[in-house]
Length: 406
Image (cartoon, rainbow, N blue to C red):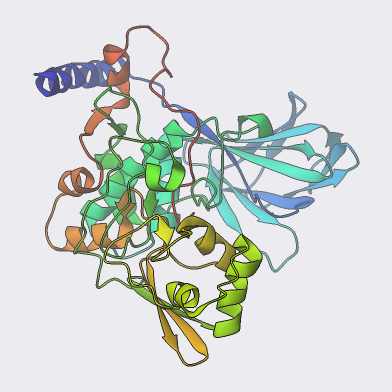
């Protein structure tokens, strides 16, 4: 009954939104995060862009010109062929809907990227802070392009579109204290600007505004990873908090994927020494050593060891920079060989499994429901229908783990 009501109201709200015309929401994305940037060359793409300095119009920049923006103390200096000024805040705004801004940060060897929407520049400490205010759908396409890559099935691109869109809205306060909403790296979602792939563009358009909600009609944490190695994990087994839609499921589709298996070799002394240094476990007798040198789990586990004490696999993976927590330990003379399965945190959507499911003919909705338990697809315009009050963001979560490989 609840599902039927959900569908009817979603359809009604979608039709009303289509008739009335709803202004698309935008996202504020921090660019070039995780690196020091003190200067950038900004150039319009396909159309002029308006240049604003501390809220005052300075003129228009042509595609044949570029504006070099640099940090100078607590201010910015900006120079082009047609203008020169200082300001605390600079905005570049395309004058046409199809316009974009090309950015080249740092030295001449840096890769140039093109961003839809507007660019805002200011000073943060001694660094240049760049923020891309971008329409949600253009941002979604850019994320799918960076996260999924080329030459995938259309159903997989649709799946990634709704997952990436949902993740963005669920975590849109993740960097609010930094002056933007999400960053452009794996801490949030990888975003390198404008999508240039027609298949991705069509997938985003065909799923426009669709997001994933749980049984309480709240946006889910749509986490994903590269390869689960044949079995995903419950959310609480990794991040302590139970999520009813992030349940462990079997996945036979990913076992032939590129990242399905891995190996890592340590010397016997390195391996035993790690447990001594990290956990204070000396492995004084043969039984204790055997516990560390012979380990073959039958399924995914939270802890390493066949005896006591138990060591958190999450910590071992992070300390030793392993591809996953799902591995066996084989002792071969003075060598200890780790034979592992999967790549990433293994919670939620398995990308390589989903790719194989799409190639096998499954729809993106079927794949979505395989990895996320008891969820619904709804249009953003319908969420207010399912809330007790008028707060447009009550259903949106606040924070959460990064989407992949953490």
